[in-house]
Image 1 (cartoon, rainbow, N blue to C red):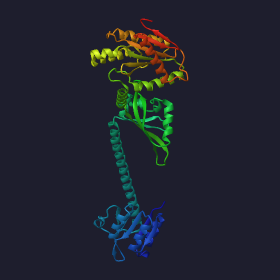
Image 2: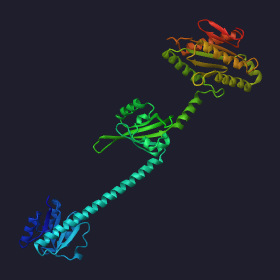
Image 3: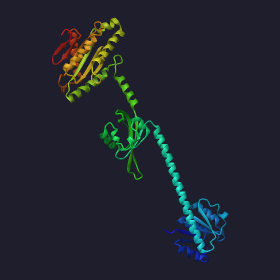
Image 4: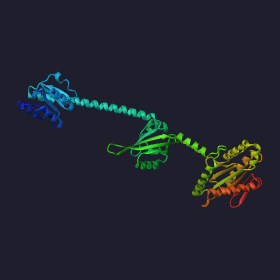
Length: 435
């Protein structure tokens, strides 16, 4: 594309040879007869070169040149027949001087000016590119420092959930190093693996995900509870290009929640679960036993002669008896399987999942014998046992029916003299020292 020249020249006849010379050199040349016309043309079109004589129509052209340098700083300006000092105050533009004695001389001056301006522009552009690059590097460094200062794990993920970036928080939280994270499938960290990652992607179709609770796999094999915020990132065309995942470690929060939950459902005196939890857990275990076709047994315990002991020894000694029962139940049952509860006053219950008659009777006997060995005077245990033996609870079984039958057996044991186990299997069967 040919460079365009605008020449402020009120007398073209005297410069005909110069005009022909510029045309011959493939320049597109427009002539402006006045200052006003020159400004109008510069406003309407783009010119690479503007030439003006020192004076035109009796007017000094240097002020015009200064104005052009402000309005069109990318235009090369050439002032004919001026001293160097006269063009010093034209900031922002490329200003050159020419004696313009001969047409070839002006052509040479124009070509030289364009070359110099081009070199200057290239230098300026390169400097701008380098400046921008350095600014981007500094911004990236500040961003990385900011991301590394947080205790949260921050990941960027590709569209197929491969990890493309992990901050130091991720290394601290999960124990992997940066090289191990790079390219790793994020779903390998999720508790629910592929199924959970598919669920998250589906939910992202409705917008960003906030405070999604799950667990991430630690390099050592344990699971770290986290709250994840997940959002999509798009390019300038609106195409989905990556994901940002911010994972907050909520281990302490979960531990606190568990402590609060245990406090709510735990009897403070005995350390066993309370009645509220007993009802919830019994209903859940009946449903689970029915679904998995497993037996389920329930013990209901009452302290014999507790009122007399409490009245004669005092409430502190009575509390010692109740605490001892809690200890005995924990010692005689399976951790994280059986459920011991204080039902109220001096009554206790024990839920025995996946436990048939034989094993339930053995556990009941261990509890009875172990408490008797504590020798709290006449205080012994009357225990009622309700079981479905080797079959799952039938459709009519409920928490109420289990409690009712166990309660009846407990009172049957008391009527039989106490310190014994009475079993419901359709008709009362009594086990104990006098059976």
